[in-house]
Length: 143
Image (cartoon, rainbow, N blue to C red; front, side, top):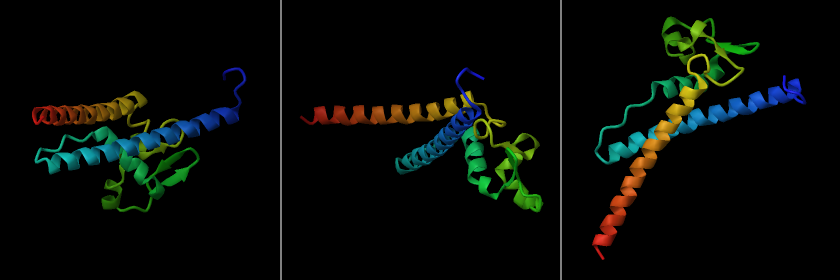
């Protein structure tokens, strides 16, 4: 442990990191939804969605349905096979998600999660930039 840090400091930092990653997953999911809707409205095919973000989001969304055990969460033991298959937690090694570290870390490392979110943001920024340039060009042409 670093000098001056207490166990409480580490726990507080871990909770803050978990909350930030949770927010990142949900924000990226919302951005994917918006991107798909925008493509539909423009008559274009929707971009391929990230499987990494989908599994991370689903696992966080259904975490409330999980059985907590110390620092992990796993599917409820009384689920039928059909219900169990619909639970994102079944995608985790041992069907268990750690509640320590970063959300969904067992399934996707933090760099991959960050890279997927940044890829999505970059794609939307590029599209919006192109649209703004087209709009500006058309505006200048009409002068």
